[in-house]
Amino acid sequence: MTTRRIRRTTGTAATAAALTLAAACSAPTGGPDAGAGGGSAESVVIGVPSEPDTLSPLLGYGKDGNSKIFDGLLARDADLELKPALAKALPEIGDDGRTYTYTLRSGVTFSDGEPLTARDVVHTYETVLDDRTNNTAKSELDAVEKVRADGDDTVVFTLKYPYAAFAARTVLPIVPEHITAGQDPNTGAFNTEPVGTGPYVLTGWSKGEKLTFKANPDYWGGAPKVKKLTMAIIADDDVRATRLRSGDLDGATLPPNLAATFRNDDGLRTYQATSYDFRAVTLPTANKVTGDTAVRRALDLAVDREAMVDKILDGAGRPAYGPLPLDDPWYTKDIERPQDLDKARSILDEAGWKTGRDGAEGIRAKDGVRAAFTLFYPSGDKVRQDHALAYASDARKAGIDVRVEGATWEVIEPRMGEDAVLAGFGSTGDPDFGLYTLLHSSLAGDGFNNMAHYDNPAVDEALGAGRRSQDPEDRKAAYDDLQRELVENPGYTFLTHIDHLYVLADRWDGLTTQVEPHEHGFASGPWWNAENWQPKK
Image (tube, rainbow, N blue to C red; front, side, top):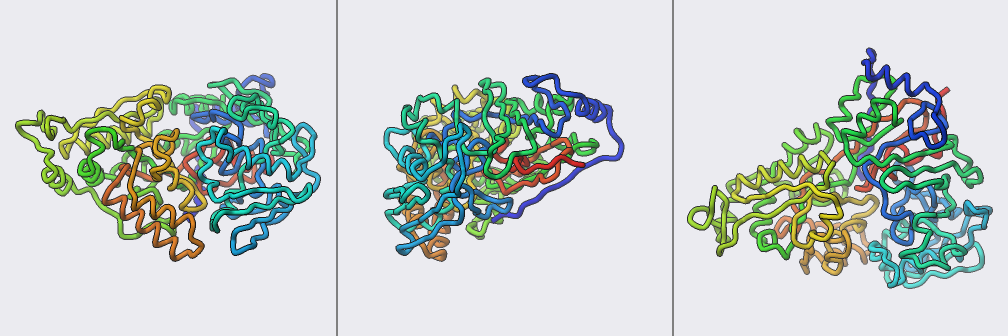
């Protein structure tokens, strides 16, 4: 597990901008939908770069926890340790790891007043696992053979095989059977009008603009002190920073260069969370250039990861030599590799990618195919743009022409099978979480799973062994094999693991960060436990 860091930054001399923010934060709110920060300890407006496609756990929303609308059987604390949520205790495990029994907390109701029962849990898991449900994360529950209710308050899972990480999968949010059973899980109204047991209730969703939540007064964990929570959807990093500085936002997720501009502002705190979130370039196998293993290996050696951490992330991150961060206990310690342009060029030469008569402007070619490909990044994401440009610069030194283009996901998604993408992934909790969906050949092209269409039998075997073994040493050996295989035959060029930075008005106590997954801003961030915040006295 990576270490958790919280860094506080304050200043003694307020800038004019900080004074403007302080004035805005002391003003009354303009109304229930004003959308401004407003300065009330009971109302918080957070700027985040993106919104979910759906708010239904049946389609994957909140599957790793931290949903404000829903609860799972279990949840995670600040140190990512599992704790009871809708279950009154951690599960009883029997049959050599093949049965997990949960007893539900009594007196829990959904926000519409209906009681939670074991049937709701059974319905949730059965619907997620139904082949007709378009949940691209269902492979994460592959071990489940069946789930049944034993009375109103007991749920029993039977597994096909012992799965060491199963308990952590039961942070999956539970939905009400009395509402969702009558809807198509893929298209039903529940996707945008959710009802859960969580600390907050959705009150409005203006797509592309904001989501608003109010505190659930009947929440089983106690009514939150923050009565209104607004997530403002602002894709552009610069715009989020500007709106935070103007007082229009109470907090925001920001890239390192913009977070640094608030370092000396009074009344603000900067939070820095380490993460499993990595940036990588997908290398589609269907592309004539990126599908060549020699090109993949050369790109892996051509990239200067240390420079990316220093110059793009301002030190707020670490080089990524694979999907797991350097300080993770599952990380294989002997796979670090510095930039080596000479070796990259040699690999390309030996594979027949030559400069000269078949090449132009120093760009290599092989059998009439120029060593060139397009690399997309999502528009407005400055960190990914900078990674893409640095990657292209390094690749060109090896004789590979990478053409960088910014675009919307609507443009990028249909082209992911042919074109490279500056992507972000990473899951906390267990190496199986994230690695299987990133790399297993059975999931190639399944939504955002295995975007590179990577197909490596040795990696598939290691993923299976890591998932099914109960012995920690056997699992470690499997994931060591996997990480070494990714050096020899990379399906992605792993670049950096990034720290997440957040800037918030300093008006509450109880703020912490967790070690975070790729998905952050909306669910992760210092507001992961907003229901526990207390106004400063």
